[in-house]
Figure 1 (cartoon, helix red, strand yellow):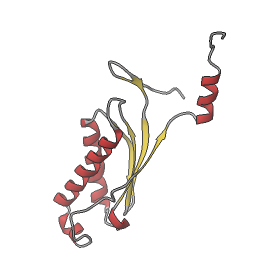
Figure 2 (tube, rainbow, N blue to C red; figure 1 turned 30 degrees about the vertical axis):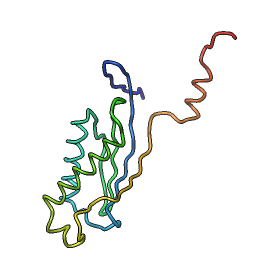
Figure 3 (tube, helix red, strand yellow; figure 1 turned 45 degrees about the vertical axis):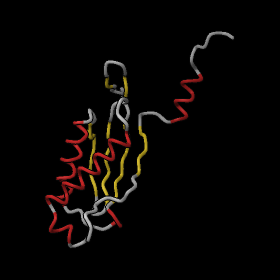
Length: 137
């Protein structure tokens, strides 16, 4: 399978991460309507950051996203913007449901899980770097 790279004026890249966001106190508050809306919100925010949500799904207390983002964007800032926008949207559109569970206007935990992902393993990359045709010393 050939890797498809994206380009900017100064970079060729394929930066993809797996992001997991968990609801505050792991409360089971996400229903089907919220999950659909979260996908729309995350995709919209990603688009405004020149990023892309490649895959999205979730359960009642957490969501998973595969995100491709450009190297000139700070990943932690993108994630913070996604969390804040999603939280505000959920409270604006689903206040009745959320206020039954939360006394404060919270939605996500303060933390998140993120891991880089790609087409090759670290060992394969190490071997590729080692096998370069270096000039004789």
